[in-house]
Structure formats: structure tokens, C-alpha cells
Amino acid sequence: MRMAWIAVPVIGLAVGVGALAWSDSDGSPARADTYRQLELFADVLARVQSEYVTEVDNPKAIEAALNGMLTSLDPHSSYMSPEEFRDMSVQTRGEYGGLGIEVTTEDGIVRVVSPIDDTPASKAGIQAGDYITHINDEAIVGLTLNDAVKKMRGAVGTPITITIARQNSEPFDVSLTREIISVRAVTARMDGDIGIIRISTFNERTGAALEEAIRDVRRQGGAGLKGVVVDLRNNPGGLLDQANRVSDAFLDGGEITSTRGRKANDIQRYNARRGDMLEGIPVVALINGGSASASEIVAGALQDRGRGIVLGVTSFGKGSVQTVIPLKGGRDGALRLTTARYYTPSGRSIQGAGIEPDIEVAQVRVDPARLRRLGLSEADLPRALSNQDGVRRRGPHIPEDQPPENWDKAGDYQMKRAIELLRQGTVAERLRQRNAG
Image (cartoon, rainbow, N blue to C red; front, top):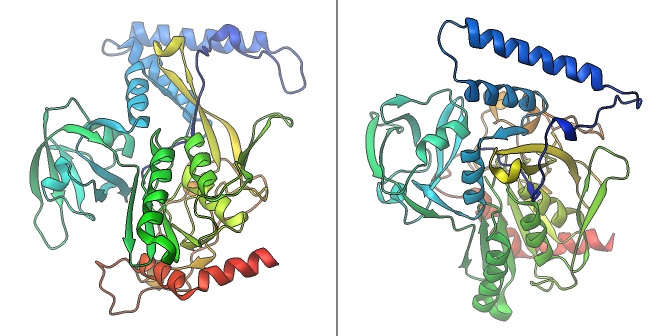
């Protein structure tokens, strides 16, 4: 699964040795101990430089040391080189050079979630469910998702060959040319009297695009619009402010989320403005195990505020906020540092536990013999933060609702059930009962 953080940009903040807080938890000075550790690092680096069997790339070694320190904290803190920081900035703007594939990882292999329309990947016939095993004849099995994605991205106009493994087919090579990929964060369509809004990521364009999508389905649906499905499945998250803006569009005032940092008084609350763009039209939020961070903020806000029914399976469970801290304005790269946890409007932490759907619906039939292999979650990641409320993720189980045995796997069972429940008035009735109670 491709992981993404909730990014809260911090502008013009540089961190160096002189900016560290030199104190222990009891307030006593720790400067001498810290300097001793820094001297130890310098001694080790000097010994490596002089005695390692081959010449050492010092910047690369130091960068690895920085990443080692940060990744020892939790799965989402890391150091970004200047190049990676620039790439991240481009990605959050929703445009980059690449192939146009949404990917995840499955048992160490990169799997295509979906090709993006009108991109090199879709034009070449790459399909959802394909596995990518090699890039330019180099095996990528076992690489982290970030490293694999980095290999696929590159300068516009440059060629790349990927090897595809597809069910019931021999592996084959596909040659493509990288293009500018303008990610459509939000798309909208109608299914009769039901509006369907797909949110694939939370970049700088998401909030404005979502608002336009709502206006679009309202124009098309008119007075007969019975409900709206907000599809957050396999959405890995993104920018915190965009998650708040998306939630705001559905809420008529009140809290969206809160963040709490290291200190007891380090609490920030985010509230919606007055005015629900759908004016109470019933909403279903679709989630799955690939719905993470910003997606979970939106689903949690709709659920806790009684504004929508959450349908699908339990979300990923990433309940932390990462702050991007440029170093020397980005010239030395940046820190991506976990600085807070976030909480739903009712004050619950979903860290490690995820959002439990109101109506559990599986996309495919679950084999009881494979219950322990139902995907990766935040709680499975090394050094993941604990849930401060002691809440644990629900264990493996057979979902309450799953496709019949003769269900066409090419169909979208969760979407079908969401549309049926909206059309039947079931969602409206459940929301009425919840808000009345």
C-alpha cells in the first residue's frame, strides 16, 4: 500500500544543532550527553571514511544516518533530500512527470490499483490488478513503494520499459514515454438519481474540485437527487487543509477534527463554516483498507457528525499528522516529522484501529482460510504509534455483507450496495434515527 502523510507546511523554519531543546523530561540539562553522542557519530563517520574497504560517499552516508534516526521514531518520519523535497512539492500541486498509474504493494510486489485516464499507462493497456515486476529490466520485487514509484517517475519525454505480470498470461514488457501527469483529484458522475464523487487524493486542488463536483451533481440531479456517494477507497491521503475543506463542504458548522501535539495544551481544532453544499441530501462515504489519513478525517467527520453513513471495510488507521519542515528554505532538503495525532469530532483516535464502517460490505468474497491475509494496516507497520485510547483494530472476520458466489468480479459490489441503500431511503432513515437519538 502506498502510504501518504497529512502534510502541514511550515514555511521558513530551519532546524540545526543550536535549535534543539537540551533538556531531559524532568527539566535537567542534557547538553553534555547530547554532545557526547554527536562526538560518537563524528568518530564513527571518521573511522568509516578512513578504513572502509571502498571510498565512501559522505553525503549519501550522512543522509542515510539522518533517515535512520528519523525512521526509528515511527513509519512516517523521514528526511527528504533537496530533490525529494522538490518532488514532494510538485506532487502536492497535482502535476508531475510519470506514467499515470495508481499503485500499491502486495506481498512485496507492486500492484496496479488503477491507470489514470488519458495517460501513458491507460493508453498502453495497463489494467487494474496487473503486477509490475521489473523497471528497465531491473527487478523491483521487495522495494518499498516509494522507491518503486521514484523509479517510474522522471523527466517528461524520457522512455521507460516495465514488465507486467497478468493473471492467465505470460509476463510481458510495455514500453512507455513519461508525460506530464495532471492528477484529477476529484471526478463526478451520475447513476440515475444518485451522484457519485470519487476523491483519489488530497492535493492542493482537491477542495476546489470537490466543491465544483458537488455543484455539478446538483445541477444534473436537480430536485430528484436522492443521494451522493463519496468514494474514498484506496485514497492514501495528503494535505490536512484539503481534508478539512472537503469535510466543510458537507457540514453545516461544527468541528471537523482536532490535532494534539506533545504538550498538553498543544491542541488545535478545525471547524466547518455554516452552510452544507448538499443541504442535507444523504451521503454515503465508501472506504476500504487503502483509505488513509486525510480520507479517514473526512470519513470520521461525516460519521461522528451524523452527516453520512460510512460503508465498506475498516480503513487503514493512520491517525497522525506529519509536518514538513524545510531546512534552510529547502536547500538542505526537509524533515517530514510526526508532530501530532488527530482526533475525530467525538474525540476518538483512529490510530492503528481505523474507521469502522457503519455498514460493513466487502468488495470480494472472503475466503475463511485466508482471513489473516486481509491486507496491511497502520498497526502492522514497524514502530507505529500506539493508540492512546487503547483502541485496537478489529480482528479478522467474515464481513457482514459480501458479494454472492456468482458475482462478476469486474463489478463494483460496494458501489452497487451504496447506490441501492441511498435509492431505497435506507441511508436517509438511518441518519434520521441517529440524529434523533
